[in-house]
Amino acid sequence: MINDPKKVKSFSAATVTLKTEREAPLVHTVIGKTGQVDSELVENLEAIFKAFGGVKQIEKAYIKATMGPSVKVKV
Image (tube, rainbow, N blue to C red):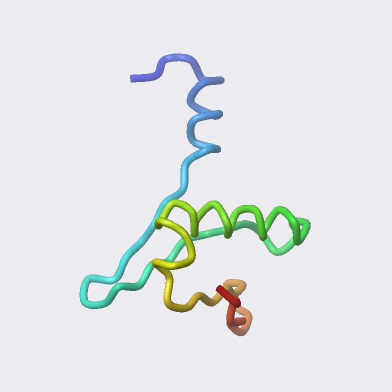
């Protein structure tokens, strides 16, 4: 258990939540906010790809804002 509030904040800031579908190999996660710089979003997406073993493990990917249309990502 972490008792230091500063450590809790830094730990939770570096944590990613992945949600998967029960019946399909599908993952939902947040890569950033719409107001972020494009390079930060790309860096976050690359980190998620790397966590799954690289782009060879990913068949296709899409990104979208909560209420916006999806955009296919070239992997």
